[in-house]
Amino acid sequence: MFTRREMLRLWAAGGAATLLPVTQKNHLPLGFRQATANENQLRSPFVTPFIDPLPLPDVIESVPLFDAPECDDFIDAEKTNFYKVVTEERQVQFHSELPPTSIWGYRPDYVPAGEWNFVMGPTFKTNICQDIHAGLVVQHINNLPPDHQGFGHPETSVHLHGGHHPSRSDGFPGNIDGQLPFLFGPGEYYNYCYPMLDPGFVDNVADPSERPATLWYHDHAEDFTAANVYRGLAGFHLVYEDPLSTSIEPLDTGDETSDRGLHLPSGEFDIPLALQDKTFMPDGSLFYNPFDHDGFIGDTLIVNGAIKPFLEVKRRKYRFRFLNAANARFFQVFLINANGRTQPFDMIANDGGLFSRPLRNRRKFLIGMAERYEIVVDFRRFETGDALYFEDRLGQRDGRGPDGDFNRPKRRKRTRMLKLIVGEDVDDPSEVPDQLRPFEPISADRLAEAEVTTFEFERRQGAWQINHLFFDRNSPMVVALQGRPQIWRLINKSGGWWHPIHIHSEFSRVISRNGKPPPLQERDGIAKKDTIIL
Image (cartoon, helix red, strand yellow):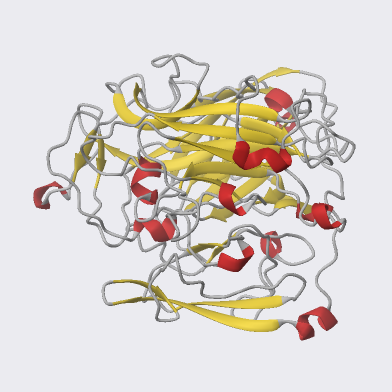
């Protein structure tokens, strides 16, 4: 039987995929435009900032049990939750002053076509389970047009990014000879099984320090991940901890106890924020250049599918879960007041889940494609009526990445992305405790036992290679054996491109960067990671 461990490959979801050019048809319908030689100076229409509310997609509801024989080993009719999600083409507005835009997106199956008005898909909220049958089964139904025009490709594979899943449910980017087909086209569906178990659970050696916090699901088709996600195929999957739970029903009820009694901000005070960039034509249609070999960069920053929205907040603590869902753009995020002065916040998690302890009084963070960072902002520091902003200061000029280096990226531009308006006082039982998810750094003895494998990322013969090899879905690059520690040395020799490297199925520890300790937000003993910026 094919297992993900046997097929581990370093295939970067998001950023690396944007750098693979593809040929598309030239005749495009309203909603999608493709570059021509004289359109390089295209600019999106101006719209009035901060007049539209921040979109917050609804939490998806479970549906009655349906037949999913591929997941039978993990199903119990009394414990498993079932969901159906439709992938479709639909019209949405990114701003009230723009005409409707045609996108590809996810919606719950029980919501009639034409009534899901969000750019992003429905949000999942689930718990870590202590029962092998208490997870969830998600049926993704492909209703994309088979005769579509423009960039992207209607054959899809859905990856729940950052999770620990059975291999057939991981959203592999293509079909593998002699194995299950992972891609499914218009008129087809695919059942995904997500047991939501701690790694090692089935062997009675579960590791609770490997629990995720913020996942996201997105299309993962080989060569088309960038274009399909740009068209809208992305959504949040938020995970909560409850070691006593035997049901997947979310405990995020707003009582601040949904994460092991940590009393982190919860319910309506737990806000996911997806950062993206787009370029719009005057008629509202999306512009995208698949021939930009540096990676396409849009000129308009988007939060949860809206251009410069606003959010009214109460005077209390809020948890914000940031996701970089862009194709090739990095962000350096600051919280500022109306005068432009930076404001502090506590950082509590990244894409590898909760930190072992919070990082207090932070004032910025760099976030690459597919990375996630979570912060807590205490609005009791401000007065009712105050305005604050999440601002990007990176000002990236092209898809290769920011100027400067990882520790000191250059700042070129200040762009306010989301306005926060402070409202009334409310009770605030939430807190950010001094311990979140305690775990020890890997010991020196364990490191000494590890086998070291090197992966060099470079561009050769006009395309991307790892260790001088092109991607081959039928030929594993490395076999990682269970129980044997490995150090993977990742080296970027690509000649100027920054890369987000996503290793599926397992969290990793960052031991060093260029021979030096990494920053605290990814340092072993404090943080784990599933996506690494090089």
